[in-house]
Image (cartoon, rainbow, N blue to C red; front, side, top):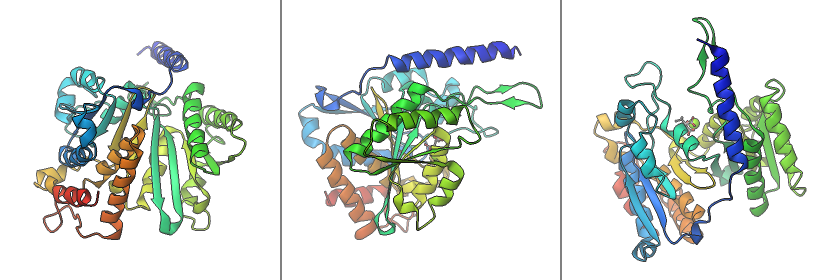
Length: 378
Ligand code: IPM
Ligand code: MG
């Protein structure tokens, strides 16, 4: 293989991406649109079952807007692992075209093939969608009031080891090389979003997480650019931590309450947000917002649980993570009051009252029963 050429192509591709980011427009203002199209992507495994319940809840909350034609729901079929493997693409072209006709998306989990399993080793649909729609900010809140935890993670969502995760080079039988990408505009935009969030939500501290002592070039840039952006927010305290000690400090009872808003490159953000979600009951309970300037996508952060489907238990799958993602969606497109009602109902049903419990098996409630329970509290 001519790896000089391969490397040249990678550099060209990333330089072009940098130029696109530089000429990027402002964030879409959903409330200014005549019509907001919400695309619902069921995905794989338990995905269709749980997103159907989340959609039902959202449709009820938005009933007036739907009647008035202000909001439309659209089903996006075909983003399944079978179709993706057959097309040899992370997202088949026709599915991607459909997705792009929507303004905002609610997505169930999609199976990510891994080396050696029965599927063609295509790129993760999550990662591809984030790249295609330029969903650069992965915002993951974790709240556990009784532990004094109120964290909001701003995970950069398009760069780091993910930018070229499927384009590494096997130079020889013995040598494999992957590429890690950090750019100035890519870091600027995630940092700006995090600091704006902190400013608008009365947060006192923003924490930057890297491994810049070792990964000097890319993490060094990430840290520098974040600090530069911090200069525009003199009232917000800024600290920076290395990812290893940060991972430890999240379980340090004396320390963890001090963290509020955290900014991280993609892979550290992936790992730390799973750890963080565990305090709140695990990844199964967490929702996540993938925000870009033109599109946004809201999803559960857990997997597709194919075994539950094989054993006929998908009707018992817990829809709360996608419903929570739906609440984040409502807030993002400007329906804050409806979002608050849904967040409150979720808290009531999953923590305070717990009249129904989901176990994933016939001894627990079905997803539909649980969605009815949530709707009864709205
Ligand atoms: C997540 C997931 C994805 C990621 C996987 C499914 C590709 O772990 O959303 O955190 O690594 O980003
Ligand atoms: Mg993850």
